[in-house]
Every structure is written in C-alpha cells, then in structure tokens.
Length: 301
Ligand code: COA
Figure 1 (tube, rainbow, N blue to C red):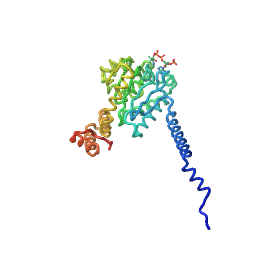
Figure 2: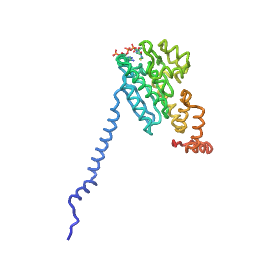
Figure 3: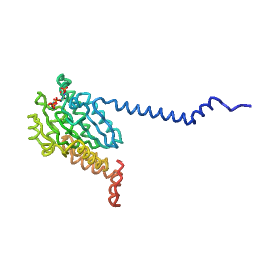
C-alpha cells in the first residue's frame, strides 16, 4: 500500500505551527524592521528627521558649528524634504536648529572659504533648488527660529511657509561682511517678505535684527518667549492646517507662490485651482458637512 506519510513535510508543518518557532520568527522580523528603520535614520549625519504623528520635525544638528550649512547638510535637508513629498503619513513639517543658541548661523564659512567660481555657482544652485522644494511643498512647513538665523539660516527660514521665532532670535544677511552676497535666494525672498527698502538696508549693511524687529517688518509670524512655547505654537498652527482639505491647502500655497513668479499668471492659476477644487471629493464633503452641521472628514481626494 502506498504510504502518504512524508516525514520531512511533517517536520516542516510541525515547525510552522509550533508557537515557539512562530515567536522566534516574529522576533526576527521585528529586529529586521527595527534595523531597517535605524538604517534610514542613520542615513543623516547633520540633521535629525523624525515623524511625530504626522508632523515631521527636521532639526539641523551641528550645534558646535551653530548649525552652519555645509554642502552635506543642504543635501540632507533636500533628501528629507523629498521624503515629505513622498510619504503620505507626513502632513506638515517644522524645521528648527539643535540647541538654544542658533537656528542656523549661515553657510559653513570654513567650507565656502575653499570655493572656486565653478563650485560656488553649483553650491548656490543646490541651495536654491532645495529651498525651492521647501517653498513649493504642498504640505505646510514652519521654521521654528531659535537664536541666530543668519545668511543661509535666514534664507532657509524665509523659504518656509511661516516663521515662528523665540525671543532670542536674530535675523540677518551678513554675507557682505565676508565679501559675498546671499546665494540661497536671500536677495529675492527678503525683498518679497519685507519690501525693497528694508531688504536693501539689511542685505547691504549686514546688520542683525531682533525677533521683535523682524515681527514688526513682517519677516516672522509670531514671537514666543522660548523654544517650548514656540514649538507649542507651531504645532497648534499646523494641527489646524492639517485638518483642512489637503488639496485646497496645496493650491493656496501654489497661488501665493505664483505672486512672485513672473512666468505664471496668479489670477489665472487661482481661477483654475478654484475650478479644480470643485471636482474634488473633499469639496463635496466640506459643503455637505457644513449643511449637516458636522465636522468635515477630508481625505485629500
Ligand atoms: N560657518 C562655520 N562655522 C561657524 C559659523 C558659520 N557660519 N558660525 C559659527 N560657526 C562656528 C564658529 O567658528 C565656532 O566654532 P569653533 O568653536 O570651532 O571656533 C562656533 O560655531 C561658535 O561660534 P562663535 O563665533 O564662537 O559664537 P559667538 O557666540 O561668539 O558668535 C555669531 C555667534 C553667530 C555672531 C558668529 O558665530 C558669526 O558671526 N557667525 C558667522 C555668521 C555669518 O557670517 N553667516 C553667514 C555666512 S555666509
């Protein structure tokens, strides 16, 4: 008679349904995934990047150099912002500097001292590209400015959608002190934020201004007593925005940015975006929720 007993197969089956084996397998899978997460986190040297319940915190992390931006740091910021674009779980971002003393004290002077004409243009374009991805991101990005925001630091803050400063924050474009000019969009964005006269004065004198002064000229949105209070304020603002219709928020960002883009007719973009909103499920949900006197549940579609 033919035997259906297959000792090898039986052994595998016993192993597969053995609770100890299953526990070991789950443990190994957990180790592997933790290692993968660690690998991704370790891939940054000069920034820290973590997602806290949908609000990512990007910290420029070179406190011994007052978080100065060298090429590697700019590249890492660019990589993190690409993750923000790609990862649906991240809905907003706060950018800040490690420690209490500085947000970012500018481009790394030791590194720029070695630049040639050729690679200085490349460095400037690299910074401009990365900062443009921040400005054009459809998810809101707030700069939490603690301490010095000078040169590239001021430029980084200006590329964000909003700026919340601590009392000890200081803003400035001191590049003329070094015989150079701002290279990461500073001449353009400072003029957009504060107007031509004030931009001219700041960028040619190299003077630093206080947080209160920055508030009075429209360079920052809010000033808070310390980093904890500024963080609470930033989270409060972002929590409000991430509950709105995401596609509409993205379109508002595009339309506001269009004001400063000579190649785009902002009014036309606004009309097109308005019409595009009407096609979305979130528009149907938003209007229906209003009529039914309930909170809308937006899905970003
Ligand atoms: N690039 C490289 N290193 C920088 C830096 C920068 N932009 N800003 C500060 N650092 C370094 C300093 O060299 C110092 O390093 P060290 O301890 O190895 O010597 C460290 O950060 C602390 O800075 P320090 O100057 O000692 O602090 P401070 O409190 O006396 O002064 C500033 C603070 C911000 C006024 C001063 O650091 C400064 O003027 N920085 C340059 C600002 C600038 O010109 N930015 C635009 C660059 S294009």
